[in-house]
Length: 69
Image 1 (cartoon, rainbow, N blue to C red):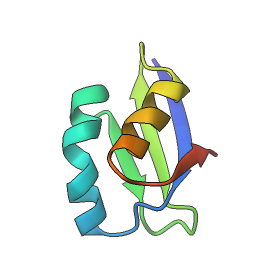
Image 2: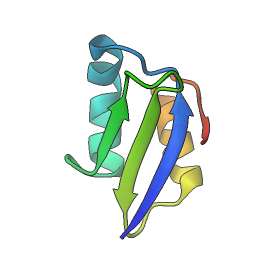
Image 3: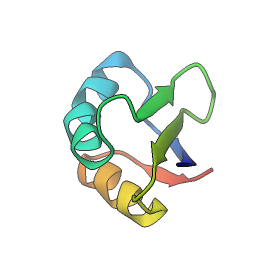
Image 4: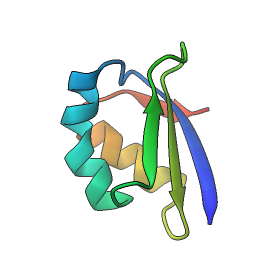
Protein backbone atom coordinates (compact mmCIF):
# COMPACT_ATOMS: atom_id res chain seq x y z
CA UNK A 1 0.00 0.00 0.00
CA UNK A 2 1.40 3.41 -0.91
CA UNK A 3 0.64 6.75 0.70
CA UNK A 4 0.31 9.85 -1.46
CA UNK A 5 0.14 13.41 -0.13
CA UNK A 6 -1.15 16.58 -1.77
CA UNK A 7 -1.53 20.27 -0.94
CA UNK A 8 -5.15 21.38 -1.38
CA UNK A 9 -7.58 24.18 -0.64
CA UNK A 10 -9.98 21.81 1.14
CA UNK A 11 -10.12 23.85 4.33
CA UNK A 12 -13.33 23.19 6.24
CA UNK A 13 -15.99 20.64 7.04
CA UNK A 14 -18.15 21.90 4.18
CA UNK A 15 -15.29 21.40 1.72
CA UNK A 16 -14.66 17.91 3.03
CA UNK A 17 -18.36 17.11 2.69
CA UNK A 18 -18.29 18.36 -0.92
CA UNK A 19 -15.28 16.25 -1.91
CA UNK A 20 -16.24 13.12 0.06
CA UNK A 21 -18.37 11.43 -2.64
CA UNK A 22 -15.60 11.83 -5.22
CA UNK A 23 -12.79 10.62 -2.96
CA UNK A 24 -14.86 7.75 -1.59
CA UNK A 25 -15.55 6.63 -5.15
CA UNK A 26 -11.92 6.92 -6.26
CA UNK A 27 -9.99 5.88 -3.14
CA UNK A 28 -12.63 4.23 -0.97
CA UNK A 29 -14.03 5.40 2.35
CA UNK A 30 -11.41 5.34 5.06
CA UNK A 31 -8.49 5.49 2.61
CA UNK A 32 -8.12 9.28 2.62
CA UNK A 33 -8.11 12.21 5.02
CA UNK A 34 -7.52 15.96 4.94
CA UNK A 35 -5.49 17.68 7.64
CA UNK A 36 -7.33 21.02 7.77
CA UNK A 37 -5.15 22.14 10.71
CA UNK A 38 -2.07 22.05 8.44
CA UNK A 39 -1.51 25.36 6.59
CA UNK A 40 -1.18 23.38 3.33
CA UNK A 41 -4.44 21.43 3.94
CA UNK A 42 -2.69 18.11 3.28
CA UNK A 43 -4.76 15.40 1.64
CA UNK A 44 -3.35 11.94 2.38
CA UNK A 45 -4.53 9.01 0.26
CA UNK A 46 -3.59 5.38 0.86
CA UNK A 47 -4.03 3.07 -2.14
CA UNK A 48 -2.48 0.16 -3.96
CA UNK A 49 -3.81 1.12 -7.36
CA UNK A 50 -4.41 4.87 -7.65
CA UNK A 51 -1.82 7.15 -9.22
CA UNK A 52 -1.17 10.74 -8.17
CA UNK A 53 -2.62 11.91 -11.49
CA UNK A 54 -5.89 10.07 -10.87
CA UNK A 55 -6.28 11.71 -7.47
CA UNK A 56 -5.40 15.16 -8.82
CA UNK A 57 -8.00 14.77 -11.59
CA UNK A 58 -10.70 13.59 -9.17
CA UNK A 59 -10.17 16.44 -6.69
CA UNK A 60 -9.95 19.04 -9.47
CA UNK A 61 -13.18 17.65 -10.96
CA UNK A 62 -14.81 18.15 -7.55
CA UNK A 63 -13.81 21.84 -7.79
CA UNK A 64 -10.77 22.07 -5.52
CA UNK A 65 -7.18 23.11 -6.10
CA UNK A 66 -4.63 20.34 -5.61
CA UNK A 67 -0.93 19.79 -6.18
CA UNK A 68 1.56 17.18 -5.07
CA UNK A 69 3.03 17.98 -1.66
